[in-house]
Image (cartoon, rainbow, N blue to C red; front, side, top):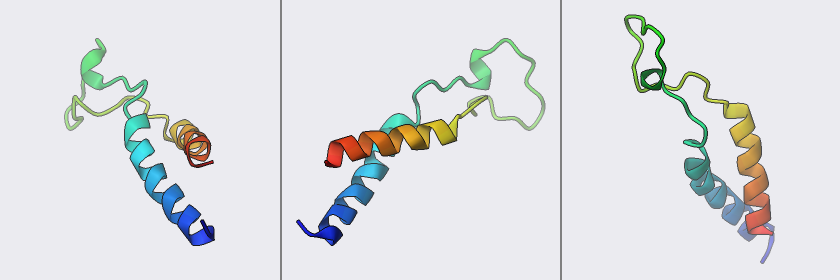
Length: 66
């Protein structure tokens, strides 16, 4: 496969794996005993840790594609 084929495979795999990695370790406002302020959605995550999930996602994708 050439570089374009690998790039397309990496790009598509990265997005598919992203949607599998995003819900890992998420704690929502409704799962805590804290008082929820007005205007805050109860299903929104407290700490999403997006940077760590992007790094993990890239590592998994590299292992998957190679």
